[in-house]
Image: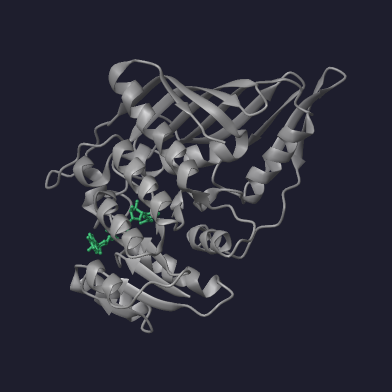
Length: 358
Ligand SMILES: NC(=O)c1ccc[n+]([C@@H]2O[C@H](COP(=O)([O-])OP(=O)(O)OC[C@H]3O[C@@H](n4cnc5c(N)ncnc54)[C@H](O)[C@@H]3O)[C@@H](O)[C@H]2O)c1
């Protein structure tokens, strides 16, 4: 198959490495407007064919049914290349967040539907990890009794993209280029994981906030107008009709204490784990004759495919008709709408409701 990368930056290199995980020959093309980014990419992946622009790359030869284009540019440069790639007749896998706002996301998903090509998003990166599967099996077993609440929190004190993480990519800090802060950067993984765990048909954002705590390391030479700490009270209606309040939190910059903890509370037990870290165990807590009992839940084995490589592998599985963790089309749009609903709820104080198509 042919793989076309638009953007030759940090994440594009991981997609190029992911190509070696596919059980087929891959012809690799890459386009970037920056000659130095292309040079750096080519020194790591010398077999790729470099192009000075996405337009030139896509126009070079007619599309084939299984061509895959990965849009790996900053978010403000997702829409145009994604639409151009679909128009050229190719399948598109778009980096997260896949759009700047819901209108753009709808436009891209509808363009994919009209083109008959596959559209996937990279929010799938942490989906279906072994520890998430272990939690799902606990949930499905009924051992928790009636599940009545959930907490899902990952807060790091100093891990801001564009400052402590990847400081050369200042665009992360500028909402006109990134679409937002930690909610657009890490939120896609949070929401995708919640969808994976809970199988929702409706999500209400009942209350939300976004904040940008001030530090001595804040850049003075760049636009920095995005949130680095956020939280929301969600109300999730699951496909089985049950309703679950979820307390959600996420930070890459906070004066609060660091915490990475998820927990589902039931009348007969609880299960707790560390989101996004499948090296850490999952624990089941229950009661044995009035005494608290805690035991580790066995998780399936970890895969050789790294987190960063997973989106391409899942997308090609979907393209080839194999079972896949890919997040595609309407599902991608529903996930994205939840993120924007959190911003709207924070801004307006009005409850936001997102219906999730089946
Ligand atoms: N860096 C990470 O760890 C990481 C992880 C997961 C997802 N992502 C996502 O991947 C995307 C890219 O992030 P990154 O870290 O690779 O950024 P980056 O700053 O390292 O690279 C972006 C590249 O895109 C190029 N570019 C910009 N506009 C272009 C256009 N119109 N056509 C062609 N090239 C263009 C830039 O010249 C630059 O080389 C973002 O959506 C980000 O959220 C990044």
